[in-house]
Image (cartoon, rainbow, N blue to C red; front, side, top):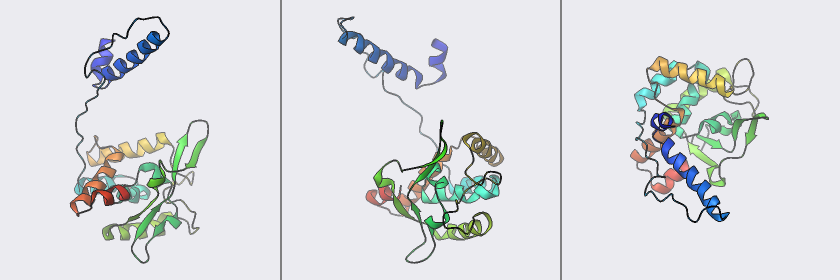
Amino acid sequence: NASMVRSSPSMAPKAYRQLRTILTTAVEDGLLAENPCHVRGASQESSAERQIPNIDEVALLAEAIEPRFRCLVLIAAFCGLRKSECFGLARCHIRLDEPYPRVLVERQRLEVAGKGLVFAPLKTEAAARAVAIPQSVVGEIEVHLANYVGVDPEALLFTTVRSGDMPRASAWMRLWNKARTGAELEDVRFHDLRHLAGTLAAIAGGTMKELQARL
């Protein structure tokens, strides 16, 4: 469908790869003598480089989102955690004592079809890490712990008032979209905050190995 192909720069490469796979199977089954898909570069996708939000824009998003999720925005932007990793955090994963303030990333919390909200292992073993918390965020975390998190070490950091658990995907998108609209930053994706964390660490002089460990 030509209109579908025009609607997205990635649609045509995806369709080409699918067609090539189908025709390769036809060749293997003896239905075709050869695969006619030989268009150089047709399967490669190109996407425009995204603009990473800056610190001032993160501040606007943190102000615009519901207060109990303000700290989630800051941890994602300045510690580089994925959204699922943020929702997997409990009080015991925040260490503000010696030798330095840090967040322990050990699991993620996801919404899985047919299972609901579940804890899951991280994407890779290397994803388990202790991430230094910038001093500018420590005070925000202390306020969040005092106001929104139970005293139990296993109490989740980011929950809704109604469920006492992380918001469902649809509820989260309403919260995030409202914050983006309020901050007049409709194009910012939550994952873009993680990219800012990597950029800030690089500006601070982090080596490639250090950046990989942090992210």
